[in-house]
Length: 287
Image 1 (cartoon, one colour):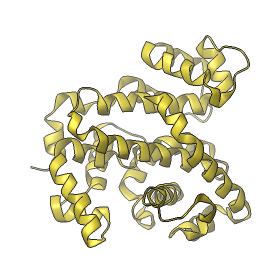
Image 2 (cartoon, rainbow, N blue to C red):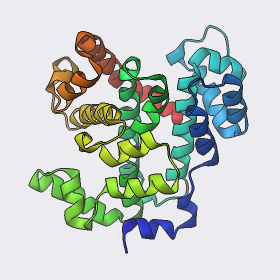
Image 3 (cartoon, one colour):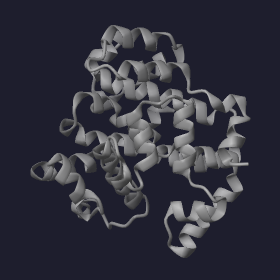
Image 4 (cartoon, rainbow, N blue to C red):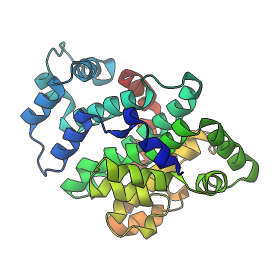
């Protein structure tokens, strides 16, 4: 029995949170309807409180207290509110009522996915409007298959991490060795069950080898570069942020050839460094 087969037998794991599913439908539109978004957020009191809490946080320097979701949306923008809603709803799905022994491991990977989603947005201006709406969600969900593997086989996934470190091999290679399958396969199966948008499915399936993507290839490359950025920061490959440059990353040149970002590389580098410094404070507010 595959990991995904085991996952499908657990009813409380199967469905995408309703609010996240409805949000994805809204994001498929070229122009997001602000009123529709506000009504959606208002339907969930917990998420509504989170949005207001974030809007009133020092990060956004509100001059007066923001007391309703219309004000919050005006302050944060529809894309940022959408990101908050999706992150909070997915976080609650993954972490509530789960095995506390694996919580730190799940937390680590979810946080890294949160960073990847946010870093992917630095390429926002180089994509068409439809793809822009899916950038954060694609980055956040690129690793969702790994979350399922950790939930279903936590001890074996610890062996995956140990094998990666011991043999200096990739996560895909280690997963294939231990499980005879890997997180992109599990994630692709989940994306189909959750009826995720085609662009998100494409990233989940292809972000490790974006050259294989037949659709939304530039999006897969963008998430791949953002993922490498986060991984190398986590592994402390650089003495400090000043030594980091997109030029250091394997697929940057290919991404540049597709969306022509070389003339903005310095600006993008600076934005990514700024996000790496500020996102930890922002992430705390999502919890």
